[in-house]
Image (cartoon, rainbow, N blue to C red; front, side, top):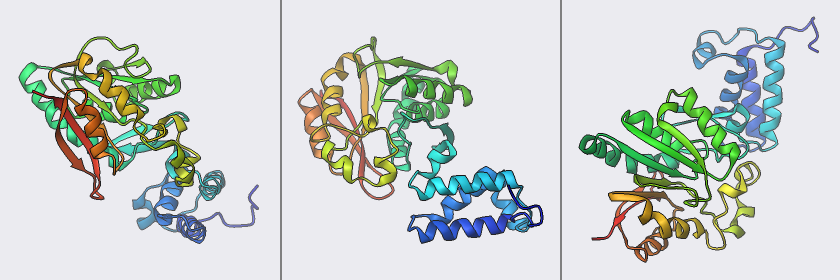
Length: 293
């Protein structure tokens, strides 16, 4: 309990102390992480820090900030602590069995969005199948941008499906988003204009050397792509054609060195590479395939 004779901490003081402690622990982006934690748990904004840096922070809020800082110092990612992450302008709740959506995956949305818009303009709708939907990030970003589109999010995890449905409700997209439990295409019927996926693509032996924030906190099932990291691509390539409308596309996130291998996998199944997009770091990140002529 806080000593009543001590003045409560100020907003500026909490921010400075948080930055210092995270930086001393060698945490990358210490200043940003400290700001996110302090703002979230104190109920303040960046504007408050500028206009009212000396405002006192109540003891309960200061204690919540302290607990969050300890979790961050122990290696838990800041967005896991907050319980949400911004993706393509949307706030998405996270859960234990969902991968934390990252900015690189926005490249996959960029790769698909023009086709979704063109399909709606031509056909009046666009049906999207999001394999391994997790939080629903990719599907919900597309639905938010194109009001005539609909999407089915597929995952093998009940927790992930519940999280995706909750995000759809929170974003006002539940009427155009459905969820289905399935091991890839096993329980999927019908055809879609777009099949999109950010599948597991880390080689199994590499998971142990990932950053601790990823290794210890992202679900292994969402990371482990098998011995060579390509198992999911083989699964998708093998069945995609039977679930794709004529003229449809398959769009995939890939590891930065996997482009040629994934392209060969899809070529053996009758698909041709239509487009390759790079992320903000210049790495090849998203591939778009069409059925070969």
